[in-house]
Image 1 (tube, rainbow, N blue to C red):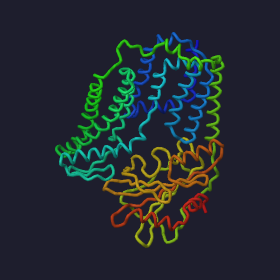
Image 2 (cartoon, helix red, strand yellow):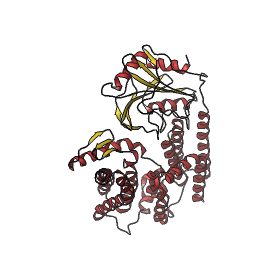
Image 3 (spheres, rainbow, N blue to C red):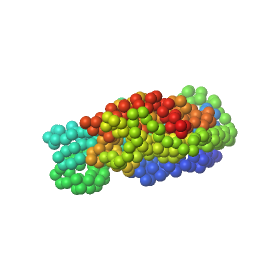
Length: 496
């Protein structure tokens, strides 16, 4: 019966938060970065089967402190929902399953199933946040290898120019796929094959470093092949050989390197029941018991309560003017005409969008993108993934970070040509102005926690960068002309 109650609780939680679980499953299936997660449920079943005999020897018990942890996980889900941060909501969904196990089965059973419970976190698709830094690391590894091979090359952010052509270390070439998969694999190997913590740490370090270095070698090899056999051949070879063979060989070599140091015997049980039953700390914790039926009802009440709170906050919408326009700026005038490469930021779900170009008498040209949101939520996050100055599929790509301006967040972006452009982003909400996406989310979370309807504005100023006309000078001149930027944004948002 206790295991049946746990199954009922887990099915209910998955059903209640089905949107997050469906989004996770979609990423497992559709994104090659997360295809390895399709194996994680089978791995979890296998890990539990190894421990099943031991788990059957420990009596389940309801444990009310587990409700506190569950409430914390549900609260985290609500915060992630408020911020439109799917990584947080999906992590919270897994944490709720873990906390409900602890609440319904008790601390002793949780201790016996500790590793499978912890390994459930690998159900969460994470790692895309590492792509920019991995792009830079890969590009620098490639440059070192090209110089060692006496191949002339120039690095510009994540773009590499060689005699063979112009190459970009794209998001798909960052190596994040292999790094994430090796992280999950390395943790599993550390648990199954090692007992010594120093050996586990050493193998885990190897599992994290080797994929990054190997990806740099892969990218370097592609450029070398392009120089000898052409870019088309190199691209095909990269997808076939490196995608299916190279990393499999690297994984096998990593395993072989760790093999001589395995110190867990095949017949070594993953869990020993006697020490768990004799542990005084677990015995002390087990005193805080509660009937499992009451625990199950409390879990349902907490989950439904936080979902209702989130739904109420999701309906918030601040009043906005029917129409807004970009105002005049002293010393500047509106102009048209094409740029080196079309640039139009993405502001999904915005209630108002403005895009215009200004020029002054000094030859400065600045593009202005403004978006106004009545509220923040799913599909209308000002700082959401893919939003802002570099829309996916636009031809523009992030090149490198750049110094911001007046508290804004700067980035140098690039389009084929190459065309370089400096873009600086600001967010405005509830009296705050800044370029930090994280700070924006914190402000939005506070508003939705208190059920306050507040508008949010996004301003992106951008200019093409040329040696003779630096973009930073043009943006600085424009900001000086607008006066206090927070007041200028508020005027646009009011439609005045």
